[in-house]
Image (tube, rainbow, N blue to C red; front, side, top):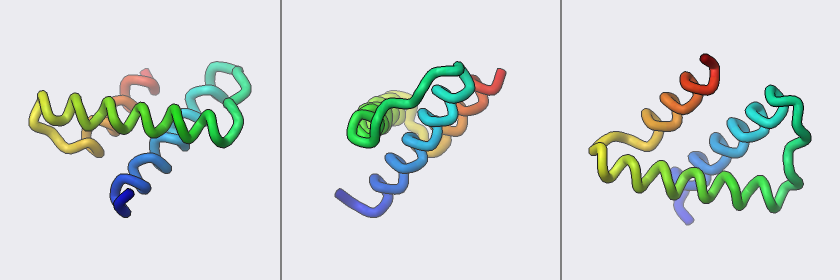
Length: 68
């Protein structure tokens, strides 16, 4: 796995932890959270291909949507 993919997955894991805490739920354990983050990044890459955008831009949009 490349450096950028690792960084995307770390950012997605932090985003998921924040989301769970905001909802008042306990975040899943480390391995499950890593799998969820990897799935999220994979889906973001698929969306990026369809939209022709950068994955980081899409993740930022997701964060903005969650904040609303």
